[in-house]
Length: 164
Image 1 (cartoon, rainbow, N blue to C red):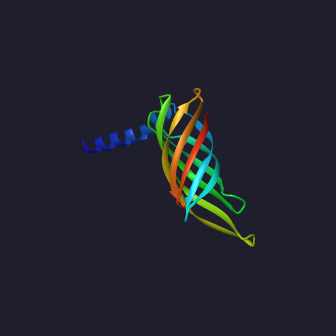
Image 2 (tube, rainbow, N blue to C red):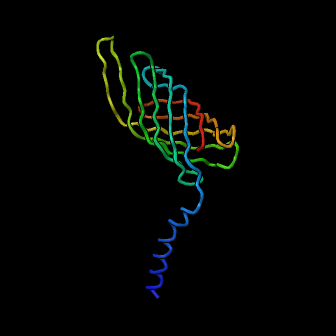
């Protein structure tokens, strides 16, 4: 009896990947984003943002992929974020769907002090927040988004995305 249960469990475990592969998952999503980021210092240090991401759907509600975001705070202040992005889409079948987003990776920054020299530094970066995906067509959407991150900042962006 015990051997039958073990054998049944092995058969089911071997069958699960085949069942998952048989389900049709949507392909990938390509995104371009832009907006505003404010870094916390003695006062808010304003930055414009421009980013891009590619995500692969792991299931109906979950997708992951790399994201690159460039932030410009003027001629002497630039930041580049290279992160992995995770999105949880709460109502993917709806025309408007709220979502949660989180990312983590690396931030590379360049600061210029009194035009004397550049100071480069790297550190870990994380952010999280949410937004609302609004379908324009079955393949194209816009998504306003708010994130809070480390190095301490708040980010307000709009994303234009394409489902492939």
